[in-house]
Amino acid sequence: MTATINLENHPCFNVKVKGQFGRVHLPVAPKCNIQCNYCNRKYDCVNESRPGVTSTILSPAQAAVYMEKVLEKEPRISVAGIAGPGDPFANPEETLGTMRLLREKFPDLILCLATNGLNLKPEYIDEIAEIGVSHVTVTINAIDPEITRKVYRWVRHEKSVYQGLKGAKLLLERQLEAVKGLKAAGITVKINCIVMPGINDHHVVEVAKAMAELGADLFNAMAMYPTAETPFEGLTEPDAIMMAKIRKECEEYLPQMRHCTRCRADAVGLLGADQSEEFHGCLIACSK
Ligand code: SF4
Ligand code: SF4
Image (cartoon, rainbow, N blue to C red; front, side):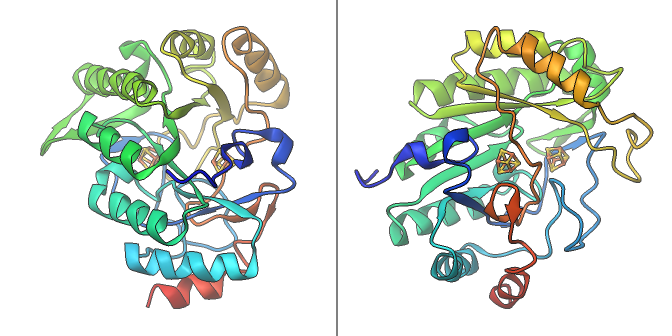
C-alpha cells in the first residue's frame, strides 16, 4: 500500500469526514451465493435507493474507466468499494480484478469491500491484504444458527446448496472465520447487522458482543427495508426508537455507525448527498 492513502478519510468508518469525502460503489459483482429473505435484486430503477440495486453491471476494465471519470467530476471521492449487487466473493475474479486495477491506477484511493463472508476464504484475504484493501464490511445477522436459519432461504457453497440449519451453520462458521482472518491481516472490519423485528431484534446485541470479541472495529445495526416480493416484505421496518435502543445496547461492546444511508450497489457521492442520478449516464456509457 502506498503511504499517500489517508485511511481516516473513509466517510462510512469515520463520521467526522462524511461531509468532506464520498464513496463510489462499483457494480462489478452480479451473482450472490446466498439468498437473504429481505433481498430482491430484480429491480433496476435509478429512483430506487437501497442495497442490491444497480442500473448496470461493469467489467473490471469498465469500472476503472468509470472511476477515472467519476474522479474527474467529483474529486472528493476518497473510497472505491464493491457492494454488489450480489456478493463480491461470489464473483471473485471480477472483484479481485477490479481491486487490482484500481490500486494500479489510483494509488491514493481507499479500497473497500462489503460481503456476506461465506466465500471470503483465507487465500482471498491474503490477496486483498496484498492489494491494499483496507476496509471490509461483513454482514452478520445472527450468531445463533437457529436465528440465522430464519434469515436465509439457501446458502450455496462449492456447487452444493444448503438450507435450514445446515446452511445456517455453514454460513455462520465461514463468517466467523472471515472476521478472524481479516483482523489477523490487519484489515479494518465493520459488521453490518440487519435488524428484522420478530426475527433478530432481541439478538443484535449478542452479535455485537461476539464481534467485539473477534476484534471487529465498528458495528452498523441497519434497519431492514421491507422489500416487495420477498418473504420479509410483510415485516415492519424498525422505527427510530427501536434502532436507538439497539444501538445504545450494542455500543457497550463496539463503536456504532449511526450515519449509514443504505446505499445502492452503484451509489456515488457524499453520504446523504448521493449523486447516483447525476452519474447515471456516465455509468451506462462506461458499461457499453
Ligand atoms: Fe442480497 Fe446481499 Fe443477501 Fe446476497 S448477501 S441475497 S446480495 S442482501
Ligand atoms: Fe457507507 Fe452504509 Fe452506504 Fe455502505 S451502505 S457505503 S456503510 S453509508
